[in-house]
Image (cartoon, rainbow, N blue to C red; front, side, top):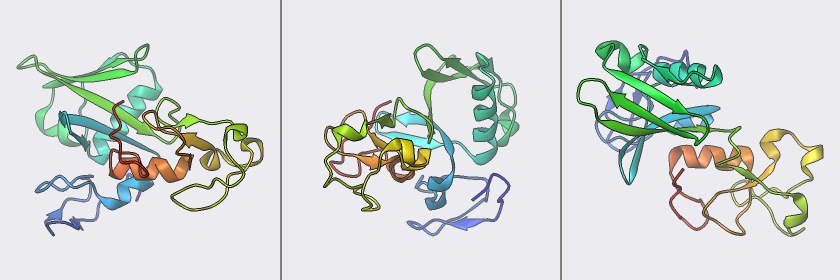
Length: 190
């Protein structure tokens, strides 16, 4: 899926037909399966147990602002185009915490970035820490020294877990669909 793919899609859970730009079902909020293939996904916290991805246009605008190290933006793409000048997204790079601020009500929501390049979520592991019998529990391939593989094949772990190792690209795709360790099912809070 690319940011230009605008074909409508049917939800695997409730079969509702959604607009191509949406990453979650408008009816049941299930994350679109091919969202796992995006290099970066931006999400907002609906409640303590649920993160919902922004649509493709909003995510692209947020990622562009993040890459340019902007402190505050007033988003105008995707969902935000229908409610222009109602929200700000504030980026605190020193803490890694981001917020969506409602300019009308003063309410805030946490915002997070899940990127294949994010070492705070996908923590690199030295090959010496991994046993020669260990393999990625998602793709089942053995691990190799990070100096001889692509960044996507680098060995990583997730913050709440101990002893569960994955290839970067494998676990990045998994956590974009379900906000937990694929092995022990511990919730990720970042």
